Length: 160
Image (cartoon, rainbow, N blue to C red; front, side):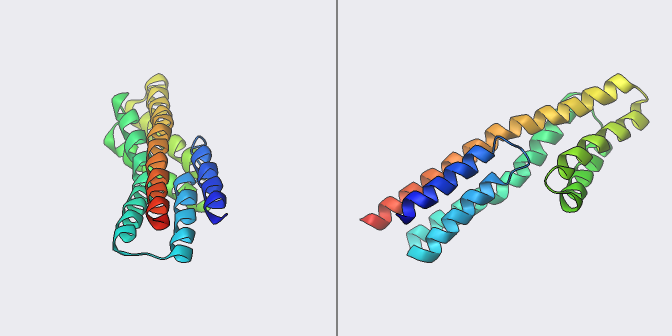
């Protein structure tokens, strides 16, 4: 019964990855953590848990990487990208869950307006960052699927 409940939680976490502001990978990881606490760890399952943990942690960097790459692809300057990432971090702390994405987009727009003095180019950079965020959804979904499959392997190994 525990396996089914945790699988349902993980599938919810996976589905929530469609919404960029939802911590879907963290939801999946917490379900795996509960399983680890209840079932226990051995050498092999400890390695699986470590890999799952690394995937969860890397998920946050994937957003930043894809957002920055999307903005850079449209001509944004590095200063604008760094400001946007910092603004996104501050926004995530001040006003979760929407503050991060909103302040990141506002940050890149404002810095690009100042840098290039062209509304259209600033908008293009902002749009590129937003599209990068959308692309990151697919990367995080793939990571979530791998995390769930690794947990499935763990369940299989525990049942033998």
